[in-house]
Image 1 (cartoon, rainbow, N blue to C red):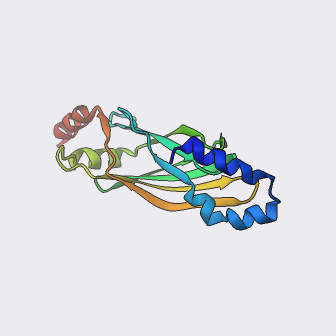
Image 2: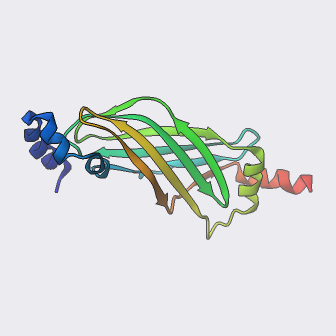
Image 3: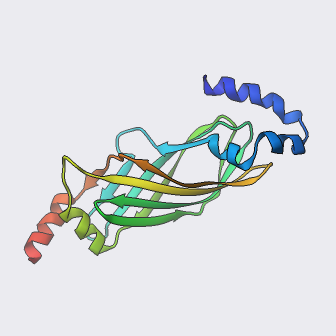
Length: 171
């Protein structure tokens, strides 16, 4: 079913009293109607392994609820080659009913983790996943999209060869 048709049907629910809407749209149901994934274009997940190493992730959010929601905060754990990189997204971001939108998160990579990632890089078997925990607000409930994992994340590496060269020179 097309997203606009789905939200078009649900807008008819808005006139119902909140106590009925809360029964139909429980916290769990609202959480199920928020879809989050890594954005599907080119360099949605990037990892820069130079001296001041950083990572960046573009997420795509699809709000399939009939309500405007607010992303209050998110905790992100980026697992790559055995290294756990963590960051938080603390900006309040609004998503209208039926909206498909994106948001960007970036974080720093500890030099020891950058070395570990470079040492264990395997072009044919590069394992990466992202674990998310998001807190949302809407007119009915404050709800969570609790720890869920996105696996099979493709990474765009920047300065990987330079980091490997530095490691080779230091040994």
